[in-house]
Amino acid sequence: MVPASLYLGFAASIIWVGQGTYLTSTARSHANDHTLNEAVIIGKFNGEFWGMFASHQFVGNLITLALMRDGEGGSTSGTTALFLVFIGTITLGAVLMCFLSKRTGKEETGLQDSSASFFSSVVTLFKSIVTLLQDIRMLLVIPLIAYSGLQQAFVWAEFTKYIVVPTMGESGVGGAMAVYGIFDAVCSLVAGHFTFGLSSISIIVSGGALVQAAVLVWILLTHSVTGGVLGILYPLLVAALWGIGDGVLNTQLSALLGILFKDDLEGAFAQLKLWQSFAIAIVFFLGPYISLQTMLVIIKSILISSCLRRRQWDI
Image (cartoon, rainbow, N blue to C red; front, side, top):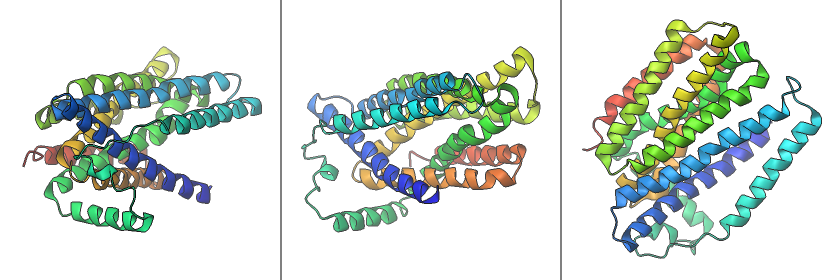
């Protein structure tokens, strides 16, 4: 499991930095070609992408729920079928990626360096990451990036472990996460279409942060294992509200980095995945050793800190 995790983490880092860079570059090129507001197009492109991406939570978890309906662990044939679906999806995605058009506009400098050697590209990317750490704007955004990783890890691990499983069982995890996914997808689409600059990003992020802050307080004050209809509705409602906040953060963080760091997109999105992944790892490492209440307090504190720094983005 450890070598597999290292390999998947390495591969995912390449995919996500490439995704963020290409999507933002494409949005900027489209805006220039059609004389449109760049920030608006970046927001819409991110909303469309993250809306489609978040739908995997809905579709994938419905499939998981169906395969596990006959037992807590699911059958061997059901697991095999699920893996075949994954393999088919990966293959289709890799084939479709070959049809992506290369952006050749003069502003897309980040996509014109493919002739450089792999080593020189890695060195350049590393230098850009270090340089961005000296940029006050990036330092102000990092707490929000870290929080976005924390809240993702919380819903994947702590939420399912302490809130869903005790009331709905393991077979209910798929249903709860499907609810999370559908609200995540819808909110991503909506938030992307309301993005028109730094001021709108600030307002939208504040709304998403307020929703998740309310959920954290709600869990801290009222969480208990209950049965019946209330026991089922409680985790589903928490999942829905948490999905709203995640949809906001996904679209607005990507749009924010695309607007602020248009001259160094690769470095900016590398920072995004670096701090998100670091925060996710912390949750998974600390999870077995601290209580749910302690984890909630930590997440709440970082949320407050990131929102305070958010007010200084426009410097």
